[in-house]
Image (tube, rainbow, N blue to C red):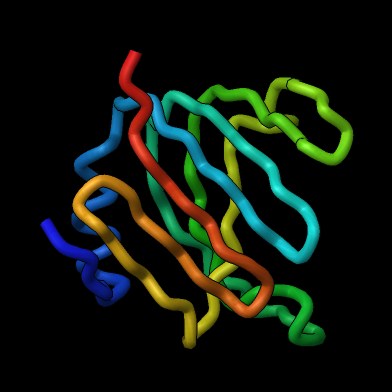
Amino acid sequence: MEHQFLSVEEFNRQLQQWNGQQIKITKHEMDDVDKIVMHLQDISYDLNTRRIDDYVPRYNLLLKGDGRIETLASMSNQPLPASVYEIPLENNTLYEYDGEKFFITTERGVYKIEQVYS
């Protein structure tokens, strides 16, 4: 399958099929790279209606499940602080799929989501 851009609805529909699977999220934000491996148990979205400024995102993608985060800056591997990983979303966020991986591109960074096969 070739690389394609998705609407947020198409992205959600395809990502929902990965519920119950092991996934890896790679976040590239400025000079920071984090890798999160989690057992995806639920996918939901959050709307922030009380934004004071543009630093707080309008929406969040909430990936729920148990997992571990590896921060390359500190070379550490720790459990997620909560059983949810948030990806900030805006109206101009781009959603892409290449047949194996999802890419979410925001003004803050790029997030890659892929399945992990053991």
